Amino acid sequence: MTANRNCLDKFNELILNLPTDCSDVHITADRNCFFRVDGLLMPLIPIVIFTTKELHQFLRYLLNDRENIAWHKNNTVDIAHTVSKKRLRINIYQQNQHIALAVRLINNHVRSLESEEYPPILKNFIRNSNGLILITGPSGSGKSSTLSAMLAYRAEQTPCHIITLEDPIEYLFTSAKSLIHQREYGTDFTEFELALKSAMRQDPDIIFIGEIRDQQTMQAAFSAAQTGHLVLSTLHTSNVVESLIRIEGLFPTQLQTIVRLELSLILRGIIAQQLLPMSNGGRICAMEILTATDAVRHLIAAGQFQQIKSIVQTSKKAGMQTMEMSITELQRKKLIT
Image (cartoon, rainbow, N blue to C red; front, side, top):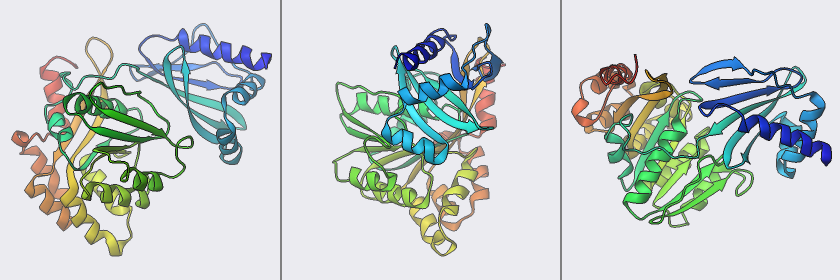
């Protein structure tokens, strides 16, 4: 146990000494660590190396029984960990027969939806009483930050019951006005589809699904949105049109017509985002935004996804914007160069 503790202390010291604006740190057995600031990856100086033996000891201390089984079965596992109130999301994986860790540092401070980086339409989205809202973008594009800002805003504006299904839990929510239950995959539930069906029997107003990855979870999200709940989730897609194509593609061809019709009825909006370096340091979201107007619903039902971009370009009054429009606005405000 002492050896395990020594390795844990070394890891904790590394995390606590990282720059305050660090977003990720990468640990690979027998190699120097790397960290990322404002999207740029660089080696740690002075050098910090974890040996293979140290990382094996570290995992024996860190993983619970379920996580240990998943690690030995799949050679990868996701866990949440806390170091002196710093929340971490850790993906442990094997590369070239060595252990590696990708550690995401989660900002304990939930951003405010009042921030100038967030368009006003996001408040309209989260005020809906039902329907589906999707936040999309590549890994590390700030999806969790945007979602947490929206949920925190709604929790303080209107008393409500929020249930989150996460893998793992990232931001920890508190609210004096609302009831918030956060459930973690592997600890509080074992299947997203079943947890989502169960959530509908727990009197929620809002259900947040960490990520929709398959047909079953998407179908369950559809059902929740159709029965009077507001459902929020994420997809790993880069723009609005690609998101619609991805949703349709989760289902077999014979079901896609009815899926498009259902989606056209429940969709409230899609936000596709990326992070850009700010003029004065840090990063800020640029967002492509689709609002489900009547014209958009018609095109979704008809499967004419490619025509939707032209509507986004000409519907600024409805809160829509292309990624190019968002970047231009951030430049106008001198937030980016």
